[in-house]
Length: 270
Image (cartoon, rainbow, N blue to C red; front, side):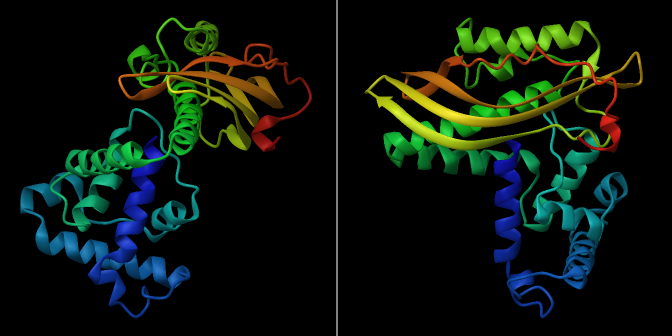
């Protein structure tokens, strides 16, 4: 879900007057020198416009490497945002003339809500599934902390879909496994999407998904388990108060049925 905010930031930066009128930045495809120029531009703008106290508190620099990672899609966002990441995002939205990160988030949320209301039922269902997948991955990545309130945003409480994720979370929390260690290669992908049935208040969806979950044992200080699978998933959704939520995710895949990596050093790649 955080990726939506990052995509909006990237778009608004490229559409800003300071960027569109800059010789190195108005090109459609950016090079290394373009990211270096954007880094300088952001630093100069923040230095000129931020109050002295705020400059001391958060700084004004943003590296070209960080900007490159953001635009190439390799900048990793985890929920909840850690202070360092929040500081980076705050600098970007301040550069775009927003008061703070919270103001920017409220604006994007309002736009997305408006867009969903005008979207077709098919578009709304696909968006819900995409967000549900991202939320599921983010909540695994947030271990050892478990926030049920976050899961309730897109999964109906105490439903089969909700309980499946909670079981995976609790199992790995009890075993002191995380995905958030540096350079963890875990990922997920939505490969195929098909609406099988769509009614006014319910829907059935089939997806094909790729999941790679490389669990790091915080006690062992090494990778201890791996789940890797491409499989079909059957989602059942229900609409309440004009909002779709997942009530079941039927699949043969079991995220707790994971193999011990005795031979492959996951830290070197999988």
